[in-house]
Image (cartoon, rainbow over all chains, first blue to last red; front, side, top):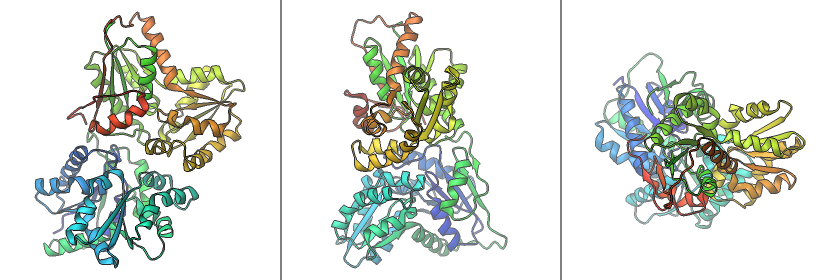
Length: 266
Length: 266
């Protein structure tokens, strides 16, 4: 089915998901929407996050997308059920694929989750992990400063180490062996996080798992693309695109080139 | 004139301004609007900040306010001219009153300004200070992590000291004697900032200056209130009010009690 994949996020973080989708599905057209005028979602209330997520999905449907990927952990935590109930196409969040991989990876059954305040407060990771196996133990930690540190570009910095140590020490004390990076910004801080947690802790980067999951879902529905031409990647944002284009390339790992601001959207 | 004063901000930071207005004008009704669903403005583009600021002003006009106080530095930087041109009532920003005070306070003529990325990029402080006296030297520094640190509540923390030292060292090197806190969150970090800058640097907290300015403007227009009853303070937000009420009291220095979410606003 030669219709594009629709992916949305609160801002630029979801480009880490686009990156993996491109790697896994190099034949697919993609339409990305980043709600850069209202970013971040991670500090906002469930109802507001649901409202924004419904609007983002409606926007992507204009492009006749065949699947919606919710690349934002906060939206996936709060809005996934609403989106699934209200729209008649597959909606894939970032939480499910990440926890499946975490459940496979753990040997001691002790899994850590880090994310924004909203994601952690929603306890959605915990609920879903318990759904796989109620004996699994889940330990949560909100890391509200990580997004700012990633955007400030202090990726390998003494201050970042100190802050990360403070956030992660409670998880180390719990002797977890698997840690889910429950926010699309966190892969940028992977090196610092891995160093503090130690080599024996497996970090789960949801972006990769989501991409595999999208491939599987499209395969089931016989919905993979058969285009022969080069795929089209279109990027839309709700604020001016300049900063998105510049900072986004760090997340996407390739040139964005062009992004369009949706006027009158917010 | 017994109509209320309207004050808006991107979120909760503007409550530091409300606090000072209440102190200076204890007879006035106040309507406050915090755009908590779209906060922060400090990382967004001029056009988006202008659009949001116009919407916030229109909302406050429903309450027949007699003056608009733009308690957000980013809005004051980008939107003040548009608001003044489009609305027929006095519009007071946080920048003018702060720089007047800074110009009075400096003896060496070297003034520092700290703020969000957007405020600093707008160069609006610099332009206005030069307008007072072109011989004044202005040194800018964006401190993007300060808002998160203030909201995380790490007000007296080693990490905050380290980050503040890094941001402020260039200003120390410039031998400024006056520093404008160009963001409504920064008064919460005053202690750390003062300690790093040293006692001989005067910190300018715009909130206080704005309150004096409002009093002056209302006095000129013979627009001060003559109510005998206790004044009414009404708080509106665009996201759920819980967090605003809880965190806001730190900024306001008194109970908020009740805040209403504006449905359908954003």
